[in-house]
Length: 180
Length: 180
DNA sequence: CTTGAAATACTACTACG
DNA sequence: CGTAGTAGTATTTCAAG
Image 1 (cartoon, each protein chain N blue to C red):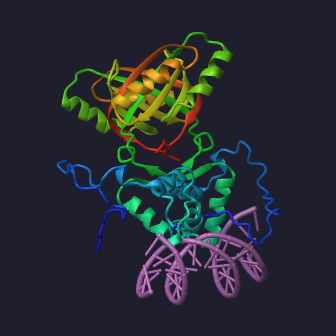
Image 2 (tube, rainbow over the protein chains, first blue to last red; image 1 turned 90 degrees about the vertical axis):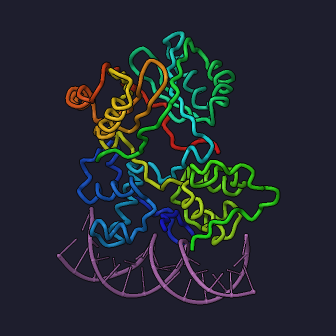
Image 3 (tube, rainbow over the protein chains, first blue to last red; image 1 turned 30 degrees about the vertical axis):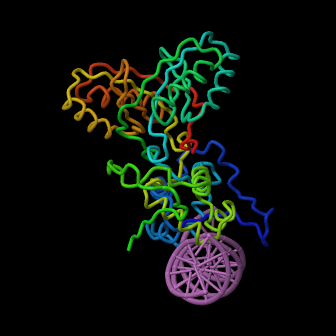
């Protein structure tokens, strides 16, 4: 299947000096049509073999592989992961949480963020504008386990004035891919 | 040809409750320690080769591959995808949107859901409890493009009474992996 | 700078024990 | 589940647009 492994058994390992050092904040301006086709495919299904991918984008296998590795090294492809079905994995409940902090000081924010990332099942945590300071999404097993999480962890997050929970009743759409 | 038999360690597991045939496969009750180790790894990095994965979970390569394919066929692994850096891909702005519908009728909900999924850059859309009917998250380029999206698409979603936008100022955490 | 073709090394995969 | 063998793939090398 797919295996872009990192090998360094008996070859040059320190000579991987790529000349793409100028791509620090390089947007997708440097992406041509083929790169976007590659990204669209990998965003949908990255378990495709490199030869099949090369055929799809009408390129030879080595050329295709080089582009994929460049996209990875440039950071545009953050990683390749397996998506697990939450329900089947026993995390069928999703809760969206709006958080208001006591004080709006840098220390208060930093302290909260540090603690929030450690909450079990926390999938997202963002600073937002509006009536909340943060939005978090948390995956858990059921309402019982969420209630436990709420009482034991969420209410003890540092600097929290108010927590408002929105339980997800139905997941209409949940995707990791966006238009390129 | 698809003899999906149960795990070999099947001693005292009798078929106690089999009344619900809703889900195609059984939950993670049939997952042993090795399966969970595999899932944890693939959830973090699925670009690992099968032999390397087998070594990590202390299994022979064929046995490991058999488990991975069973996890895929069971639907527990929904897919393997590449995660793209939104900022690098020109979708650096994230907006969380709370939606209130005019009427709470099945038709109203269905119509909204159908339209919401077609909004460009819509990553998530969920029915929630509380003061909103839906929460959506939308990825877009910048505030200008979001303003255009807001004026041209969001305000025309069917049956919408109110839309409240929470612009994400800082993404603290955004992950696809949850504890197993 | 990137591509493509051939050759090699490694891996996925099948059959069997 | 593991071992061995085969088929196919990834990956390097090198020549050329």
